[in-house]
Length: 87
Picture 1 (tube, helix red, strand yellow):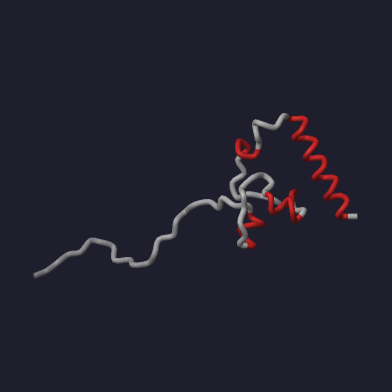
Picture 2: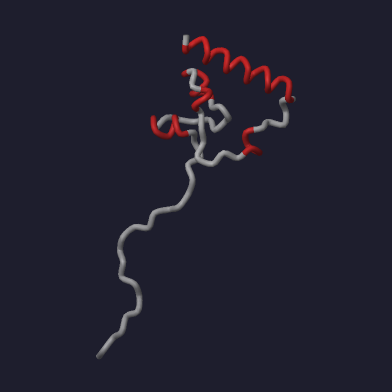
C-alpha cells in the first residue's frame, strides 16, 4: 500500500492578520482603551498628542455630533496644556 499525501503537514499555529484597535499607548502598556480619539486614558495622562492608532481612519476620528468650532476649541485647549507642561 503506497499512500501519497499531498496535504501540507505543517502543524505550526497560524497567526491572525488583524490590526490593533486600541491606541498604541494603551496597547504597549497593556491597559484598557475606550477607542475614542483621544482615548480617556491618554487624556488623563496628558498624552493627547501621542494618542495614535495603528489605522488612522478620519471617519472614526471626527465625531459628527460635535460642531467644528467646538472641536477646534478643544484642540486648542489640548495644545495649550501641552505647551504648559513643556515649560
